[in-house]
Amino acid sequence: LSHHITKAAARERNSALGLEDLTGAGLGEAAGQWWLSSRAEAYKPNAPHQFRVLYGGRESQGGELIVTFDEQRWEWSTTSIHEHESVRDLERAAIRAADQETKLNSHRAAITGAMRNSGPMSKSDIETASGLRQTDFRVAFAFMVKDQTVQRGTYTTSAGHVRHDGWVLRSGV
Image (cartoon, rainbow, N blue to C red; front, side, top):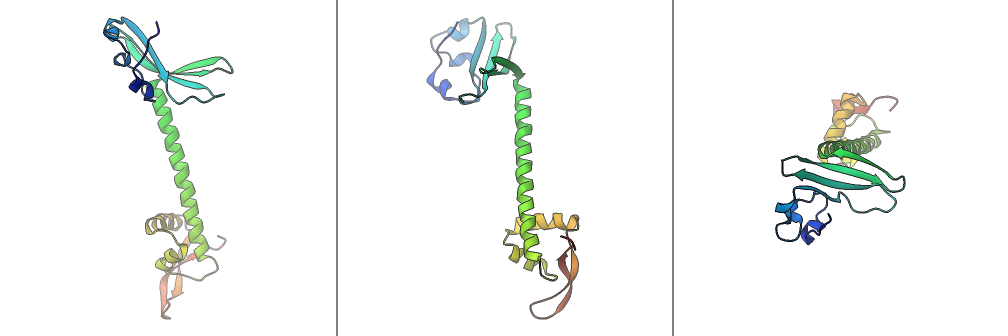
């Protein structure tokens, strides 16, 4: 049996249809068993399609699945909605971690560039020369201290005073 759904339900992506989304009086109440499918993501030509499927019956049986269908290979697979969301969350976390690592490496490069070919510098002079925001600088600099990319050294202030708490790049960096 195929039936129409409301316009509001048709516009919602990433949410499974429910019996209340069927048009017409009393159809949801009359259905003894059902299987409602909707796209889980927008249509993409020449790509596998994902559908959310909500199934159930009067005896309280039911569940929700993601069905992936590859029309080019004519293959399909099913995944529980919980497993699908867990995998999607892990993928998002991996992307965030990769983005953070790229950003950290960029900030480390800015600090290294600011310190290269100069003698010992104060932390505030390094921050200014790097051009980084204070929070970005502090995080990257802390990693560089921890892995000993930067080390303490002696430096002379702009007023000509010798200080023993400056920072230099480790040799070979």
